[in-house]
Image 1 (cartoon, helix red, strand yellow):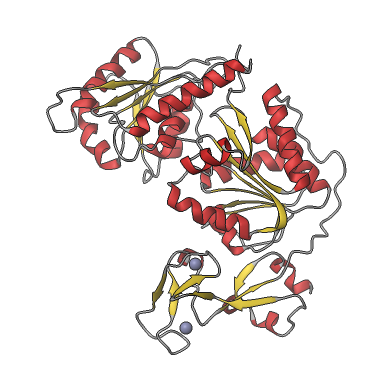
Image 2 (cartoon, helix red, strand yellow):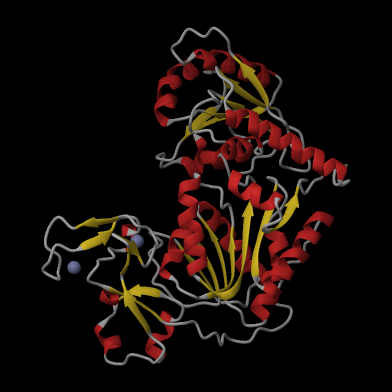
Length: 448
Ligand SMILES: [Zn+2]
Ligand SMILES: [Zn+2]
């Protein structure tokens, strides 16, 4: 059994079994076909998608086999393979009290949320925590995670984004210093090891089955809706029957909003920031009669940027795509040659350094694609969005982008301006959503 310890709660392919494990199969081992037939279609047993493709060349089974395209990054699931899982048995090293070493203070609304989450962890079931950007989500999880760990439960904190996992990991290790913990993401290079606390990208959850008593998923809105279905499938498969699921979001999608409003799902709403100042409401500036080349908006935006810089403000300027950024860059370099600035995008190898420079005040402004829409915090900045009517800017993206301003309690204010040639639904809805949260916060007496 000792050899199988790392298989507890895992969902792996039979072909991944090392020869020494094959000699000694433990009792309780579940083996199931890799695909399940549903009518005329096949569903992948690992990721739940029905996207299976016929292999172009004969498979190792010497036939024209099928495989799953959706989860291929984790290794090919072939129709001739089997999935093997071993239920989690628990039995982790007992922990000494206090399990939680964090000594901070929760705001009254965080306190309430913390109690709600604790209740869900005790009772099982699902809870949505809808918290505005800057509400301080991580801290309100601590108490529930601590209790779960102390009771010997296996706990997972997942996010679709690697950046979020990498940011959470040291904070959790510090808060729960005696708890064995691993951080799992594609390309981490680490060999998998079973631990009581796991931080993982949601993609990695597909490698688990009935492993966790508590599953917390942060930033469920990070990707468009169609990817969310896969996320919920992965989270559910990795959860033990009757376990607790907590989903955190700053911008719930339509379907989730409906579920919250109709009371079909338990929800906790945190409408105020930790520092008790309202969220900056974006101002949308509609550019009429642009010359049709799509770049007109950037002239107004750069004039606006110049005015802000002259007032000694520092800015984050969002540009929809890398291509767009490349087109605009020569203009920016000419116009702003006397200012310190940099540009970052997802393919930029120096992006960490540039973000650090911005953080330390060595730059006056930073041009960025949506990669900085979430996760990063700069103190005292204004935000400009060029071409806010571009398709990359969903409602969730715009709410997150606006949420970059006014984060720190020392500088709780910031100006957010959307430049656009058309009013889009995401623009209207994001502004409405932010205003509604501010109203709710005011009504509940959560603002100063
Ligand atoms: Zn699959
Ligand atoms: Zn095959």
